Image (cartoon, rainbow, N blue to C red):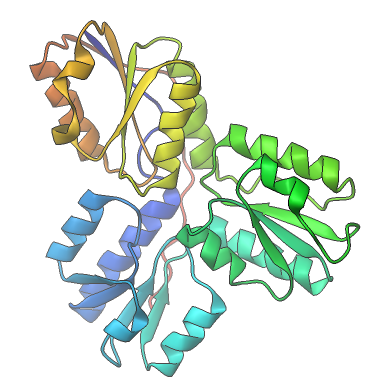
Length: 306
């Protein structure tokens, strides 16, 4: 059995920045440091940070007055920021810069009187944060089928933004449906789907032609990790999303000659290495890393002002 590692895979610049912000806050402010929701969607990352003194909460009311509070990489709405101020919390914003760019476009479109269509998954933290930026009408669109029923204030003044972790293929279908219904739609100058999501999906498309099985390392609530599994499945490749090597069923390997491994943008490389080790213990003897894009993008960690 042979193992092929996807490239690129794993942490993106936004995830690295968010984790660095939390770790820097621990050093400068001491523990506990509170984070609203998961800083990124990965079980291992959350567990390790919790051991260092990070407390993850779902509601701001759970946080003691005066405490250091970090907003996750997925972003929050202004109403959440205002609530934090009312509660006397010392806040740090770890929103991914690419998500912040989407937020600014929502505000600009609404300010011009446009209805904004947010292409994304209903209930996802990033989508909720993006919708919370709205100064006017905003609508979440999760499938091409939903477009037909959309009702807007003025069909000549409609624009869209996209959740950064969507499947490129799914987003394309929704955008085509939107263009048909609103021919004058205002589109972003470049896609809102982030470079890391696109690169990882492209590598899986290429890898799918060479493997019998694809293992995607990532947590179940990670949107971009789920999309990677779907990309492979849509190309007819048996694929599974696993949080760690312990979730692999050895029966998946029966009759398999080549296994591909990739990782979502919030999954650390040590999890990939553990999966690789598991496969080697179950008969994998050959290993290679595919050729792929080199990612050099880095986002600066801001000076913490709390």
